[in-house]
Length: 209
Ligand code: URA
Image (cartoon, rainbow, N blue to C red; front, side, top):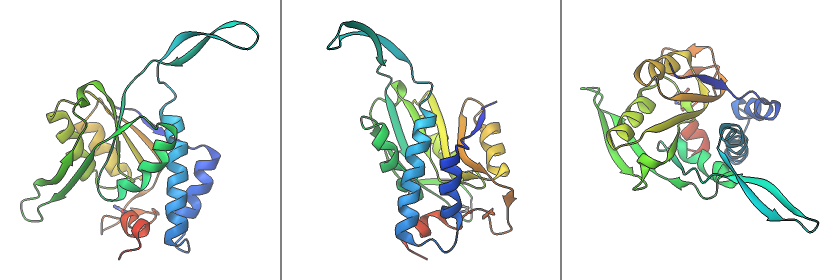
């Protein structure tokens, strides 16, 4: 079963409060999401492997550490996932970015990918799927299936806010995928919104309705 990590650093909790607040306008919402994404990237990369490196400081030779060259891929799910990419790239600037766009046919409920563009070497990369709101889990589940079908082997899921219903869907469908959250909320309402949540993340990021 994939582990759920709630990244409840005080700065993340503080900024999430203002992200949730309906008084927060588009510009500030976007900036806060960017900042939280950067803080979450810091936490999610904690276990990156290191290797020894010998350098010369101005004083003496020293054995130090550098990242062992683990290759990362960020995979935002369109469109709200895009709002977290730049914040993450501030800390992981060499990451490659793939994009997945999906919708569910309202009649057949089958997922349809309307856009997918991935780095060619996804099998060798640690992929971080980015979906700010893990509600029913439908899109994240479909996106992860899509990536696995194309050879992805190591996948993590990163979300700002999740509902327990969505977490359960991912844990059942993808027991190999760890989930990193800014907050785990109470539940979904009858319209599929996370409560208390923050409303529609895409609309709030892009000022649409
Ligand atoms: N997607 C959103 O943007 N918000 C929710 O609450 C649920 C799904």
